[in-house]
Amino acid sequence: MRDRFEPMNRHALWKDVPSVDWNSWTWQQQNRVRTVEELEKLFVLSESERSAVAATLDEFRMAITPYYASLIDPMREDCPIRMQAVPVAKEMEVLPSEYVDPLGEDPRMPVPGLIHKYPDRALLYATHHCPVYCRHCTRKRIVSNPETAPPWSQLQAAFDYIRRTPEIRDVLVSGGDPLSLSDERLEAIFRELRSIPHVEILRLSTRNLVTLPQRVTPNLVRRLRPYLPIYVQTHFNHPRECTQEAYDAAALFADAGFVINNQMVLLKDLNDRVEIVQDLNFKLLQMRIQPYYIHHCDMAQGIGHFRTKIDDGIALLEKLRGWNSGLAIPHYVVDLSPGGGKVALVPNYVEHREGGQWTFRNYRGEKYHLEEPAEASRLTPVE
Ligand code: SF4
Image (cartoon, rainbow, N blue to C red; front, side):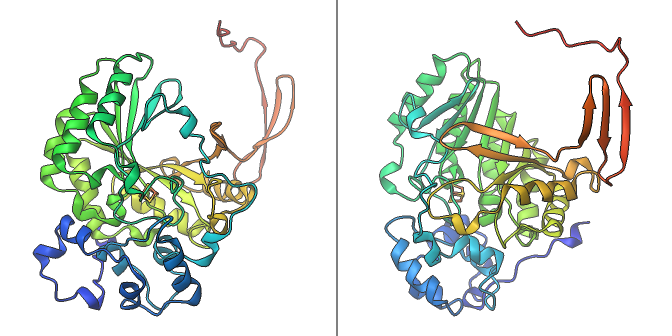
């Protein structure tokens, strides 16, 4: 199975970089592509890209690791990696139906940097920094902005809030990408959270497996392992991102007992075809990553060019369910703006219902009738 994972080919610009540097996450961070001039050394830019890189530098910066940049097909403007990493002029178009804060996070921060939106879980904004700034990012209002970097005193206030809020049993360490922090800082965060008795579930939200797999080192894994169970939530969007390097990074986590799941975002002309999603999900399963969510592209400003129709998302799910192993079927969710939370959408398989008489269609469109026995038990009503 592993031979289905190709090591990525370095772009010619970096072919003479010694392996010790190439495989160092700090070297990758320090040598990120951040300007038009650097980008033009990689491939010929379109007019839309050239103008957008300059225009978005102050708003939502561009940064691309040499690793992720090497996955770009230099000949294709519609390369799925390029579309996620390189700004285009359409980012400047804001629709009236879009929001600066589409998930309604800012009004739901009891202390700065801690989002407490759902009853039993909270999200800790641990850093503003990411190796690559994804052009479809939902949190672009704060991510990449150094002014939003939380100092330790702010994190301490968040720990204090969690400590005095016993209904929080699940904390998601997010950002930005928390793996941009040092091993020491990450360990300190997880140690604090694990010391809170009512916090049962810890999650680490990171796209480094995709954009900078060199960041997942034996030392990082060793430092975080004492705080298991930790659920790693990552964000692969396309099978081209499933390289041998990504496989090896996922294996370090999985071998140490971390559970990894994936949250794909459905992106127009990038991954909105069933064969792409299928290929991605089966590659992820081989990497021991559970396909968990397909997110409908949310209502953040300037990402309208990525958005598909909800009907298309449901139709895509219909082509997966039944035809593919249930392990490869993520939940398709819409995160309601502003701040309504996620709702899961499924194709409607009920053709007709009258009392206990049900008519279903299956994934092949065949009709099946089900008569519920009158004595079938009812759930005890919740008080
Ligand atoms: S890694 Fe996540 S937080 Fe960072 S830019 Fe990408 S989507 Fe946004």
